[in-house]
Image (cartoon, rainbow, N blue to C red; front, side, top):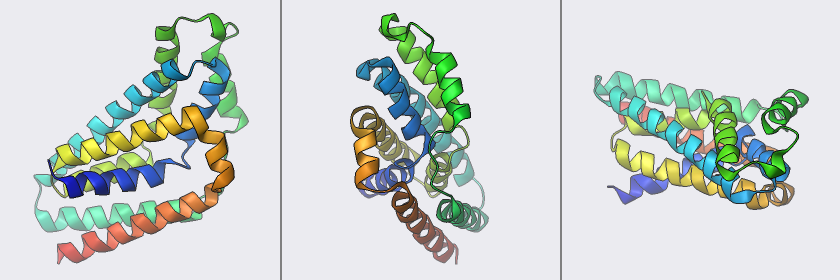
Length: 200
């Protein structure tokens, strides 16, 4: 495995995921279940599976001609940067809260740990589908070293999930969500420029 690739994937996905709806959903689920470990386990498994799929998609892209792939990667990162920069500060809206309420149920405190993990897995897996972090992971994997990209991205997701379970609300008070989004947007833009330069 390639250490620099792991670090790049970790940093990119970590910063992009911190202000994401998935982290906020993890905060809410942790508060409602009051069982941190089962919540973390379900969310971590869901996000790791998402990263497996994203890295595999990127590895498939790697088999295509190099220049078109790098141009496509640059475009995808540029789109991600624009979306992050223009996105408004968003917290979980009433629709998300209602769906979480239905998933949790009235007797959440008496659910066995595996039921909590399964519920969180389903909620987080669906919330993360098509997310910018998937886009980032697939784009990085398209440049090669898909296994290293997966390790870095999955480690970032597991770390962010732990933060969401243990200290999510505090983190968002210390560093405003809009600032995290701006930092992620700048990283995406830099990666887009790097991919564009490497294409030529």
